[in-house]
Length: 434
Ligand SMILES: Cc1cc2nc3c(=O)[nH]c(=O)nc-3n(C[C@H](O)[C@H](O)[C@H](O)COP(=O)(O)OP(=O)(O)OC[C@H]3O[C@@H](n4cnc5c(N)ncnc54)[C@H](O)[C@@H]3O)c2cc1C
Image (cartoon, rainbow, N blue to C red; front, side, top):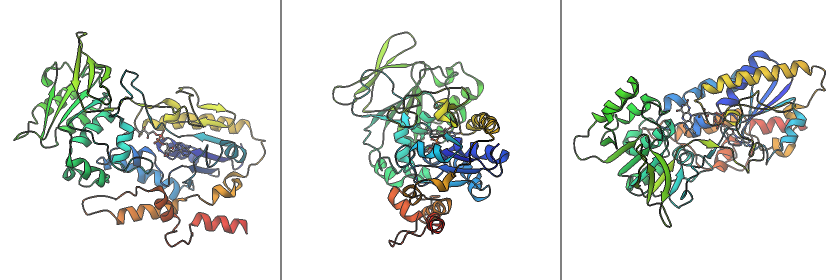
């Protein structure tokens, strides 16, 4: 094996972090750099996982140890494929791994999908998580919204829509978005799941959590909530929803439609309803002013790195010394921990490859990248400055106030508020050049 192979991981979400963990254990002396186009590490843990699920987000502390203790370098603010070419990365590194995830909401592929008023769950959850490349506030959804999809992300969307601002205590939710939404919240939600209650891919505990939000009435069209033929955990979660009747008139009603396939989004210029096929084969139109689709995520054909490649369960090998892992490899399936197994398998392939190419020439690694790239890098210290500023800006009932503006995050990371750029990455870079 190369004495100190240079390894570049593109993407600092769970897939990239688990891979770096595994590789570091096997190769204590390898130079490992994790690039991200954003100013912050951790991918969807920061920008996908719902802002009111801080327990899940706390895995960031475990991933941070990679940079604090395990000598893995974070290089934020570097978009590979635009700001830095993949070729430049491969020329300077023995191994490059794409752990870039999947950000594009999967299409439903039904008529009416392009009507105004149809939104993706990725778009929605990025706004609620203050993603710097997303709209800062939610669109006007109207009184009635249909959510299509039976997984945990669709339950995230339901939960975030039925909560009042006070229900977000302790979260790092995008407050301007929540406050604007609270002025005209949704009154009726129809959740449309293709599968039956017992086969729906959501976690029963996520369903049960909905029942703990005050002021919400739940119902199930076509079958009573308690009458569904379901597994015991799902059954008791559904029972819980049934018994969570609000004291007074409900603020919002949620109807769950199991065994219902979306056949069309109805409307002329904008959404007016969703047509579903019921288990008996009949068609039924549910009135809705907006639709949020939560049917998974897909490859973006315009992505210069993976484009229309599609998911694959093979070794992750794309070309010599080039691999992919995580959602960029398997498609949008699996929770955070599931990326660990994937990373282990890809790491084993990388170790085999490096062992077989012992005599390959040394490569410059990170310091061989173009100056124009290195000058803009946000290192882990820079990220910690952003992190500290966000925590300091949090109101008492929030865990942090995320910055919405990428340039502001970059300036904060680089301590460039007064026009003086003094990030540690830049100081090191200047020193190395002199
Ligand atoms: C809305 C939502 C909620 C979720 N909630 C949960 C949950 O509660 N619990 C759970 O266990 N799982 C949850 N998941 C699933 C979990 O987030 C994924 O399993 C996991 O994030 C996939 O990891 P990844 O590293 O492959 O992708 P990501 O987390 O998406 O990371 C990809 C990273 O690559 C970066 N990147 C992309 N392109 C480039 C480029 N060209 N150059 C440089 N960097 C780039 C991105 O900025 C990002 O940081 C959720 C997913 C979603 C979408």
